[in-house]
Amino acid sequence: MSTLDFLSPSAARDEGGFHPVARSSAERLFRSADATFEERDGWLVPASVPGETDRLAHVGIADLSSLGKLDVRPAPAGGVDVPGVTIYELSPRRALVLHPQAARAVVLEGLPAEALVVDVTAAYAVLALTGPDARALLSRLTHLHDFPAGGEVAHVAAYVLPAGAGYRIVVAQELGHYLAEVALDCAAALGGGLVGVDALPAGEAP
Image (cartoon, rainbow, N blue to C red; front, side):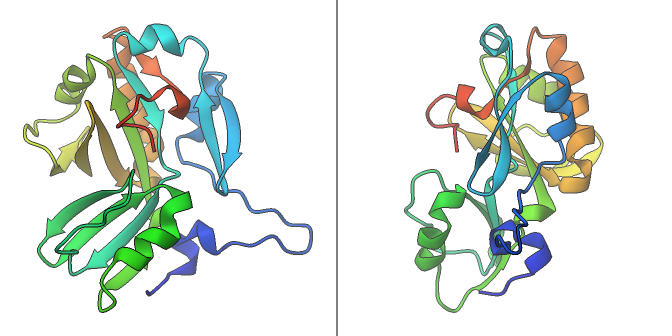
């Protein structure tokens, strides 16, 4: 595996009294909603948001930026048989693999030994859309129709991946806050809003 340390929070270690904790680019938006944060697998994660139960009746937006992200070349032909892992084939020669941080070692072991694997965890933010109006919200953000797909979402380049009955939007981390703000504005018109990762149903949770 090839690593770019500055893109791989898992490479950080406690040393000299310093305790590294990774943060999402959408953190500020969740803090403004009084989200409760918890440290999990080296990340500060918005676990819950006040009022999220009512929003889930329509559409919720959760921050899954803490998911591990691997750029794998060529794309693994047989996939990776690990729960919670999503493989998006960008082309026959390249795939983006999303995985829970706790499953990182198992995922790496399941990839072909000859594959070039680059940890790009810190390069991307991930927003999850959940609830009965998730598809309606997505329609307000993009003209893409069939998923998984890559293209323009709220006027920026992103990938949209199905996850259970919901969706995940993968975008460059420097655009994560912007995309979350636009999605939140559209979700509010549908009666939805921000939710914590613990509110995601089975099949959509990390």
